[in-house]
Image 1 (cartoon, rainbow, N blue to C red):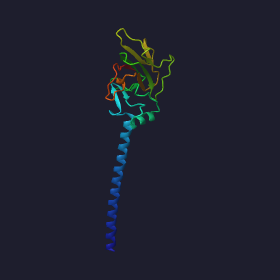
Image 2 (image 1 turned 90 degrees about the horizontal axis):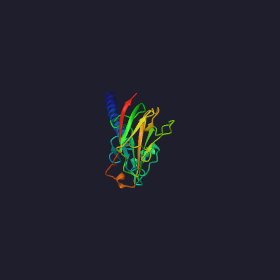
Image 3 (image 1 turned 90 degrees about the vertical axis):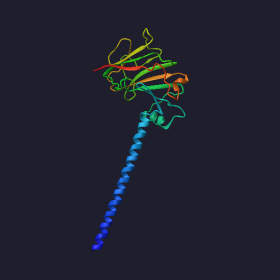
Image 4 (image 1 turned 30 degrees about the horizontal axis):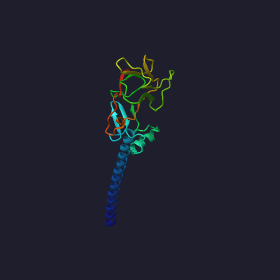
Length: 211
């Protein structure tokens, strides 16, 4: 009887050790999968120095719509459902924050300040957080290199605000969180330099105040 009890005790300890080992292995596997998933999500959501370039609050995916685009770039645009222009002839910059790192929001007023970009054509367009144009009574959705009014010194200022402003004004209504898209089209290789050379004149986004 005592031998049987001792054997059962030993078997119980062995079973506990096995279950403990299995549990530790399962935890390691789950942790590895979670870390891998989070790192992959970050790479195709935000990008890295290998896939994106930054200039102030602006970020650009350098291989957008290229035939040799990396998997993270492809996944980024597949997830967003957007069809970007090819980076061979264009550069698209996206800003979700102002130049001080604060999230863009329609409750605040901003000034987009810059000089005309050295390119064939460019535009600045605000969107809501879901990537939709912001409806407004003025039917005003963007400014381009052809429509923006310049100051006497050659610079431009675009007001991004709920209420009408004199001069260049882009309405935000009650859209909530905002995103600004700067689209640059040019055949110049400067715009898609793999080393991250940036076009001159990428504008500043200055917050004026919030309600």
